[in-house]
Structure formats: C-alpha cells, structure tokens
Image (cartoon, rainbow, N blue to C red; front, side, top):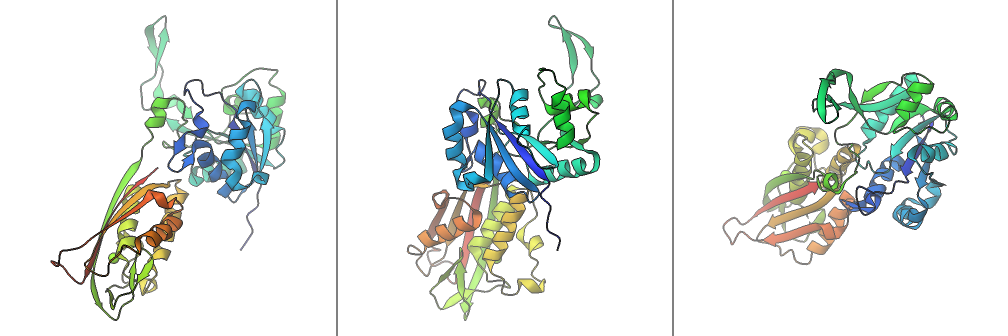
Length: 369
Ligand code: MG
C-alpha cells in the first residue's frame, strides 16, 4: 500500500468578530463540541493534510487554544489575524509550506471529508478548486428599491470553502492585491491568475453567521427496533456487554438487540439503508459477528459524511436478567463506540410483565448533527 502524501496545508480562518451572531459563534455548541472543534477536527483527520494554520483574533486566543487542546496544540500553527478577512488569510498563507493549500472558514463546521476530497482532486488536476452550489431562489437586479431586471440563475453560483489552490499561485495572487480586500479567494484568484475550477459544493456546508441559521441547524432523528428469541446455550450480548444468564439470543450474529436497534436508528438518521442491507445474514462474515464491530463500521460511515451523534436513547424490554447493574457499563461501552459522552446515552429497562418471556426487544432513537 502506498503511503498517502501530505501535500496540502490548511488555513482555517477563525479571526472574525461574530458581529451578526452576538456571542462568538466559534464557541457555540454543535452536538457535543464547539463549532471550531468540529470544523478543525475534519481537517485533523484528513490523511492528505499536513500543517494546520489557525488564524485567530487576539481577544479569542485563550478560548481558541482551550477549545483545540484535545487535538494536541503542537498539531497547529497559530497566526494572528489582520484587520480584514483578506489580511487574515494572507497572514495564514505566509506560514504555508506545502505545495497546495485549502483555505476554510472556521464557522463552517459541516465540511465533509468527501467535499475536501473533491476540492483536493480539482487542485491536483487544475491548480484550483472552488466548491459551489446552485442558487435555489430567483436572482433579480435591484436599483433604488425597485427590481430593474433579472439575472439568469444558471450563470450564478453560491461559493463555499474550503477553497483549494496551488500554494505558489495563490501566494502570487495575494502579492498583486495592492491592499484591496476580497470577500473570498476565488475572486482574487480569478482577477490576478486565472478563472478557478468549480467543484460540486455541499448544501450542509453552510457558514454559521446569525443566531437564526445556528438554531436552524438540522438535527436528524433516527429510529430503530430489534427483537430476538432467547434460547439455551447462547452467549447473551446486550448493548456490547455480556449478561450472566443461561439463555441468549438466537441469531446469525451475536444477536445484540440493543446495538442492532441502535444501528438502524443511526442508519435511518443519515438516510442510509438498514442493518440487513449492510450486514446480510447470508454473508459468511456475519456468522457470530460481534455487533460492536458492526457499530464501529456504521460510525465510520457517519464520520465520512461528517455526522456525529448528539444523543441516543434506548429502551430494553426483557423479563430476565435484571439490568440495573449492567446499565452504567452499557452506557460507557456504547458511548465509546459512538465517540460521545456517556451522559448523552440513555438506557431504560422494562419487562414484558410475563407476556413475552424468553425474548429481548430494543427500541432506539438518536439525533445526529
Ligand atoms: Mg438483530
């Protein structure tokens, strides 16, 4: 296997003053992280990214370093921002040493690995890559409060970040800017170098600008259910923990109804197909398969699209054994598998009141952001 070449640096612009947001949006919560942690984490995890340059506002330095310390602060270079966005990006670019660079807004936490891959492929082929989405609203020209004409929507796109460039070319564009400010680098590049290449953007990759669009962040809800019959001679796995009991679930896999319900909840939340299509029962590898491994695979599918679990609630229904002592360890186990705090995993236990003994049933509901 070839080692991946880390030939991209990332400049993450976290130097805005959040005037429209009120408080500093970089430290607002998304699932179990701050906006800035979520944004930066995607770049930290990307195999092609070498140096990560954080452009900060002086007043925020302590909060920024506190927010990023879990990644290891030596992973970053910190550069002070300028008085405009263009100046801030220029300060960041001065620290870039890789052949190529991605420039990204700190307040776009929903950038996905897939989108970064598209931008990188475009930079490698054409020297630039600008993610853009089509406009859904009609566009009109306005003068003195009156609509004076139309603007063909087909010729207009909405541009996002990360914007990717050959480092040499974007640095050359900045050297020619003569103090002028630009709202983004694609405009400067097209004026000073050449028309940059467009790649397909991502509707989820919005920039958090106002409290309104922050609270408008779509949390997706998912639901899942599972039931197994219990029989003698089977290990009883539930929510990743082995229960002490003479019976266990009949199943092709280890029959962990709690994890199976959870997996269907996660897959439904991201609009993916159900557990049966991911792990077909006639697939030989499903024989005795550890459900924790299944959950780990599903979590990597979520991660690739930059979804994280905000909270999970599971109801387990079985007459025996009693679960009270198991629930705290189940929560820790599931939280670890889903990379989230165990306080955000709730597990409740019910019985069938003797109406359905020798069964285990699980319901799960999740929100993912
Ligand atoms: Mg099952």
